[in-house]
Length: 394
Image 1: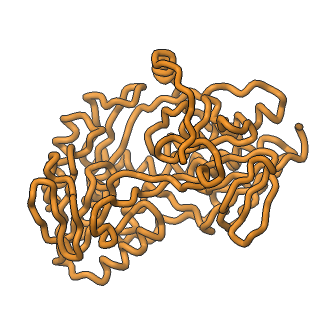
Image 2: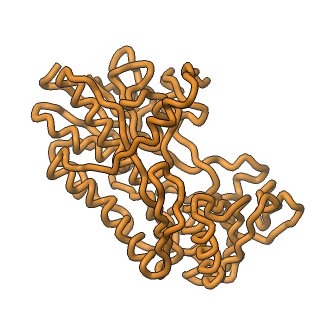
Image 3: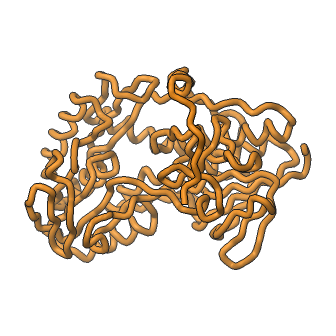
């Protein structure tokens, strides 16, 4: 099959848009992106939207190639046997190949009182939180649960805007960061007025309307509780009878091909290649989206799809608008001793916002142009571990 094929991309995030744009290298391919929102949402900036920024969203006309059709709808089921997707209105859309790029969101808190928490991981959740904060006095106690990048960035953003913020790490502050960078982050948050509580005793065990309970027995006042700990993926793959990992990500081989069906490939946060998923990030999503498109293009040309090859070299976290940390990393995605902080770190973080979108725009105009760092670490890990048969999750 080389002509007049139809590829559906489910999801219009970094992975989905990159895949769709790259697929337009094929001159006779029809590409449809199905997304539930009519605008592109750079998730790595949602903490800024919560803080009051109004320039976060991007029009799809800016990032999608002209040949790509955008269908604003919701996929309720994938019919792999029939090579079709079922939409929310009951209609079906046929495909020759499918790119599964549904992304991820925040994990549902598994504690009593979870209904009193607010999230940041989706556009709707971020807007709801912003509205809640707008209706809350500036002196109200705000608690951010989770010491990862989203928690750190949300706490810094709100504190910089005058909020009284407590950050509950439930463990280590910024566990990815090198210890030196972690200490720098703690000092910056303290200067912003954030109260950082770390260690196992700061794990939240219960949330109330105006308080949070910690594992060490403390009860802290909290008028607004923001939950950023953990992540979750949509259950579309599992509901469609496809094999997933324990977190619900679509299980694939190293070419990003679904282990159940070679006409389905996955990319981004919702993909689990060899049951060894990559760290959640816009960077990884874009690279995986490009590789997923390459896999489809190779198959359309009757060629062998190549295994993915991706290495990391840094991770960024903002600490309010005036400072940030650009953490340099080894190719195995572990932090090095070297990092850039302060205003220079903030500028580098700002560049990640800019270039994450520019990469999509460039691919829209020059499909096939996106490249990324390679490395042998992943292949070494895969060679060293015992072979495991995939197990379908209920």
